[in-house]
Length: 331
Image 1 (cartoon, rainbow, N blue to C red):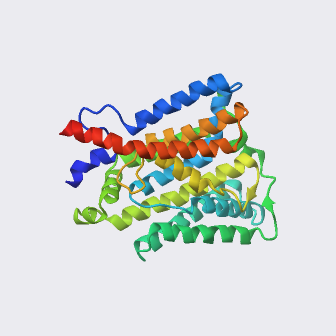
Image 2: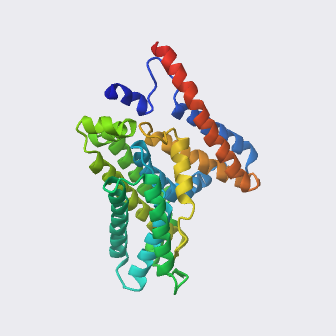
């Protein structure tokens, strides 16, 4: 029974069904692009397209990392706060302890993995619900970041070679951080859709007890996704610092909500057991294009939040309709 449910859990259509959440979202994204081509100034240019991607990378990295977490039935509210802590730690390692920039980045990624491991320990060993556990670590990480910067407002004057990662462009105007984001996307796609680990995450999200009875090491699988979430949060912090040229304790504020919105908008069930990396990317760019297009169309910035909320409600409302269509075709 569990195995039969997994194809639908991964967002695939039922027999004879050509309509999926991802296809609907792709059509919606296309409609956004067509609208802003008419309403926005200089929207349909290669430079603006690359700018949309460049500005979406930090939130996009968090959204990619959160997809397997949510597919497995969990949640991680601490990713934005961990970005702030990682940014401050990176700045202190480089400036105060005089670490080489590469070594400082490596230590920061390691710290992110440890922070993710803390979340995993509290959730899997102490059996504290992920919502409560990561809400607590959100406060912990943000408090540590603010404590580390009590004497200094931020860290600046990073070397130009490092700033190129967030501000530079490769041949053809491609943002320097785009290959990194593409590599992360490909890695999470392979993990979730082409490995036994990924299939076990869908099983855990669909039925944790059923997964345990099937012999799946539920605790280790959950630990893996939370450690990955912490590591990628630190990676997003490094890209963020390179992008802005400064490391501050408030880095990543509110990013966890944007990332979760992108994941859920992309069709991942907040209850677990269903979701795709492709859907997450579509959700991410639906939000990014909306924000960019409204800016170029001289519309109020607040309108982006209103329309994003409407998109999210609409995406949730359409899922029961697709489920009923699938059941009718199967019957």
